[in-house]
Length: 202
Image 1 (cartoon, rainbow, N blue to C red):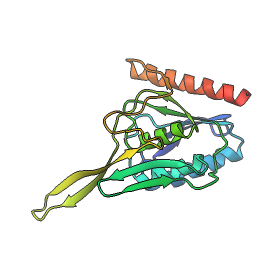
Image 2: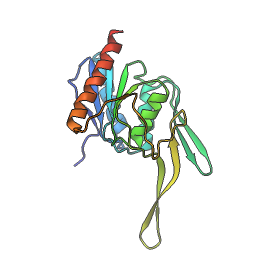
Image 3: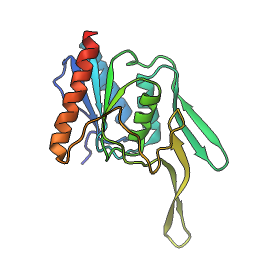
Image 4: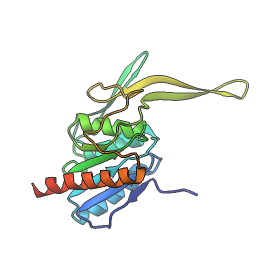
């Protein structure tokens, strides 16, 4: 059963759109772009991008999603033993002017952390929640002659400001947490909504 990775959690046409991304699958970018277009056509004034408990997924999807919200900017620095690659967004994403708040928690990992770092370092969004998981490695799978396989880390990801993700995670701009996970979810949503309401009024 194929489950959607992008969910509109608010009512369509709301002033603030709550969009949840559960993971980065091969169709996540297209699904998000479609929802964004529909809500923008209906006059959305703020977006809560919910990456809580998102374990990551395809890097290309993460890059394309960041590109929707950023003007030309660095999204990610990828470093391996023999080379460095800088991933940059193109100019003029479709949602660059809409106020944005990102929700993240201790289970937001890998691709989620790339987005958190890109939005923080480019002053694009306020991140609300908890310090992220700390998974920032480039991994490859090599098949062995005996039928087994070897899963290896061959590089690391850094945020645009060269902050290390691996083993450390990224701190939110506004820490909102609770020992009760359901209570934490509610408090984080409330904080994100209040931030956007102030931005919309201003």
